Length: 356
Ligand SMILES: Cc1ncc(COP(=O)(O)O)c(C=O)c1O
Image (tube, rainbow, N blue to C red; front, top):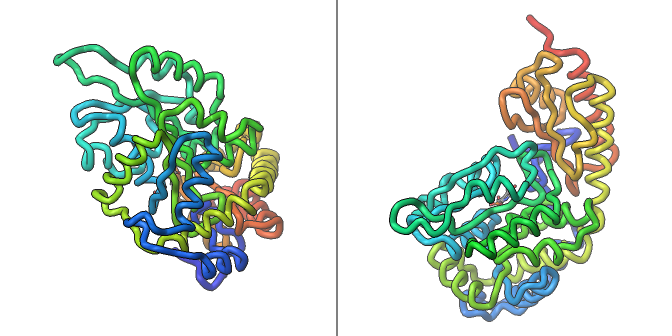
């Protein structure tokens, strides 16, 4: 249910909901544009150069979505008939609707990770290389940072580096789904560049916490991005005067990175209030960024019931399982909205479902 009239008191459904700010809209309106399929959009070029430079890779490619950026990364590193490996809740595996299989003929195998936390040993145990024509070979390890369905989990650079050493030795590529990499960086103090250095390709989203309306960027080597440009067109992602969107992305990088800390603090405050109201619903220590996942079954709710009851009281949330409800903080949820959300969710958790 959309909320164009602003009737909701707090919309915690997703950080993809943000609407462009007035400053961002001005930047978009004033963007110099050209036809990007011909490589002639100066604002898009500027964005790609900026992101490549920020992440310390040779080149970058703008895409309409994070899913496309991920799937271009997958396509690059894995041949049809080979596999990627990742955790069982990874967006690439869970939420891209089988794109690796449908678009690229690639299978996926997964390990189970608590809160989506990446451990090199899980990847090492699963990947298979050098098995000739007898078994499926692993072409790629996918890591998600922060981890969405894990609850905004920030990945350990040490674990990533460990995996990098092993994958390098075994000739397996690594792709980072960095849809929320800036959240990870702001929370951990590790630069996006240091994270990105350990991967062959990295996708970052401008349209999540950073608040742009559309767009993601894939980075990698110049050759890899040249090849991805062809595949992007093949996937239907070649865009024309996309500089209007790139201008929003540049604005977001200028104005909306440091403020992610505010989202993290508000999410933590809500988690603390909820844990205090009903212990066991959430451990505030596990809330590392802008996402809270609460176990509402502790209060007798099913997740869909809780979501419906919260919505009736003006707070939109999302059921991520039969017992778990996800709450996401973003640019359009300020302190007042956070206070309103805390009132509603703590009250519902304390009261439990009222039986008719
Ligand atoms: C971790 C992660 N990766 C990738 C995506 C895909 O982004 P998009 O919705 O732009 O395709 C999302 C979307 O929520 C996500 O959470």
